[in-house]
Image (cartoon, rainbow, N blue to C red; front, side, top):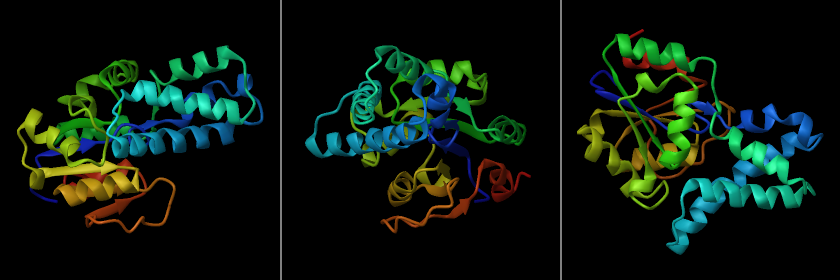
Length: 224
């Protein structure tokens, strides 16, 4: 990990806390808030895999809304204002506490940083701007350019195509184990940000390291 030229981060769950959308409107949702948040994320990711399998891409904003509609119905929440609140919150998710300081340390060390996300630009750009972190990233890349979701290799190829960095010079970071393995199989040096202390998915692609959160990254790169 000493010859890394660029760190490329997944957005949702890695840099930004997707649970913060529901947490922000817990009072409007009521006691089902935590279950709704967990199901929403599960369905959101499940729908991307299913759409990949069907060969029927749609922007992540649409997929996120479709997943939310299912979850609201499953939990018997019919108030349309709750849907509006939650979708709008997705445009300004909270970064995890260690993220700003970690990105600043990487910038001082001259490490280039970018985002590669399933999110479409209309979702990502407002969120990154709202967090005050836009100037930390050289590029905010969306799979929308490839018209397919992770873990299709075409999504990971966007990094070299847009940033000119060979895969073996990239440190890719994701909190999603399936994404981490997909990126490793593609050829990135991958750090799984295992925030939930979950077991490994045991998929193809060898991970370079596993950390609890992003505060451990500078030391891994030798820039602590």
